[in-house]
Length: 274
Length: 323
Image (spheres, rainbow over the protein chains, first blue to last red):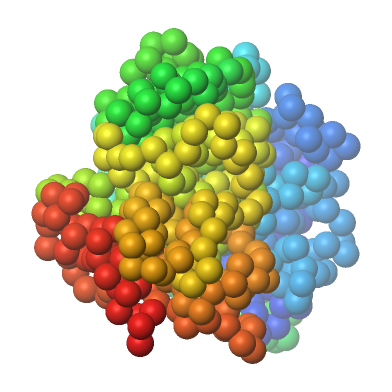
């Protein structure tokens, strides 16, 4: 898909709108609004113009592989997959329903465009290494993208993977860290500070770039860059709950239930940003 | 093609399961293009240097990072490879349990976890390197085939099977270089059922891993005491067929289980679970390690201390049978 910047912007808006609907309809089960909203432009840009994926050929071996390592924002992934034809409205409506494939954390289903089961944090990068190594072995040109959270980088296994990706010089592997500076219990600086995440990756031998994670052109440019012989990490600085001015950047919205009143207000606020 | 000649069998036995693993995987890689080996800084321990040299493009050293190793294997398997990952037993089971459950088995991926030197095999290296809980946790995972061969020949046959098997498996290796051979070349390995090694009339012993040989020796000792003892090798530990197990047990008035593992969750539990569903069944005595921390010693010392020798098994049978 090669969407224009305006279409990608509209796609990001739709992701947020879908996420809001799904969270509201999930009732007491709620949804991970905060991180879904911070990653909306990242997902919209990847699916809108960067990933070589096609809902008509979901298991095409040449497709790019997108691995959602921060599996708790599956709600946003489902939304973008619906907008791109992998899922339908019925699928979204079944979100968090009993027996639905589309639970809070996503489950591998290639026909729906979901590459791996995720939700246990810290493993997406390692799986991505295996997938990227496979591409190299088979002389395939697809690229492997892994979306992580900055809170997720508390997990030691992320750094085991960081070492290995550099060792194997995987320049077909792109990690994106949705750095919204928060995790479940609050700000990352308070829960578990990682100092300068860019420097840490650099120290492990990665090519690094820091961008505004809500800037579509910046995301496109970063994703299109390639460092020969090195994996690339894009540190995407984002704002948690971006798009809903009354709660943007505030803690307490990592996972939330929303009342009817909040839902109406949020829908209205979102409409204003369209 | 693996050649099951008596010369090879003798050589594997001399090496023990851990070192024979590398030799056999190397052979299998000649026949199966999709085999990939990943080791967590144990290429030397698992004797994988020949594999690394002859199939360099199919061997990865993941360093001392078992979580990354198994998750990486999941990525490779997702793209069509049959990945054999290895480290010492506690590190490729306990340490990476969640990765195995969630990434490998929940996605039903073609990854084989090979547990080197399980049980007490690492002797004086101590409690950190023993694996006495791995059967218990591994057999609780759906979709995970759990295999515990009795000797290097059965291990080679199991690996031959795993090279063709499209799914997740845990291969538990026990014993030392020179541990006794139980099987000959003509052994018909069947992953779907247990193997009755020796028929008996009074007492039945279900054993796994190196305890199979000890149990056969115990059965021979018991002949002198007039107790006819059967021995069953239970090498497929998940899935099992409880009805067939209960049926086999019904031939005896007393059943024992012997294993280099905690009696909680291992084959003692497997047999117990199978019998508990039947209304009439023989008494069951479980031999293995009891729920206590182990203070290290060499392999023979640890086996003796935990009552896992032919002599101790025979004594237990005499004591319990005459009760």
